[in-house]
Image 1 (cartoon, rainbow, N blue to C red):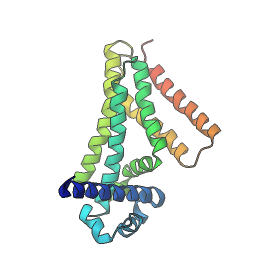
Image 2 (cartoon, helix red, strand yellow):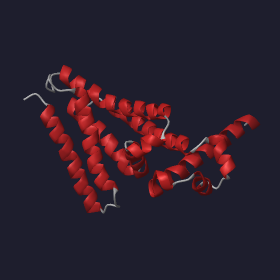
Image 3 (cartoon, helix red, strand yellow):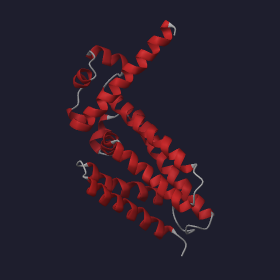
Image 4 (cartoon, helix red, strand yellow):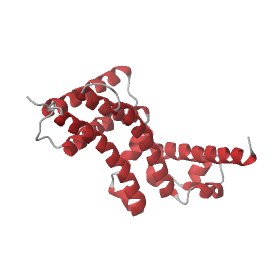
Length: 210
């Protein structure tokens, strides 16, 4: 391996270690209580080194948020490409989000904070727009599956695909908000799983042609 290649790998590894440290602190302490000093300490780097990779806390917060969206989007693409019925594809997309957020609680909390006025006031408009693009990319996945269902005659013709997609993600987020608040026991996990399943079944039932 060349010296330049080795240095590039080291640089990428250091950047990822910073993002991992920031993700943990944003989750545990929240946006306001997390500082660049604390992130540098957590990553075992100097504050000066931190600023070589990220210009400020907002820049780092956006990077953490986008990383979470990229992981989610990757799994959604896999769900969309599966050869299954329209109804099962809707459920698959729904549970991609649910399973992603339950397995990565830090990302879920950071996602949710982004939608508060407090977060948006601190984030430059350009970066705000970048995250919004990822939000709508996820919503568009649900919209496209619903449109496919309408074309196939599975869903009602008067169904609004965008509204359905928003309802699907936000009702899931509401249940996730309860589930992520605490460490769940095995029985509680099963109970929440039932809630998620009943929720998506009700949405699909209301969307179907009678």
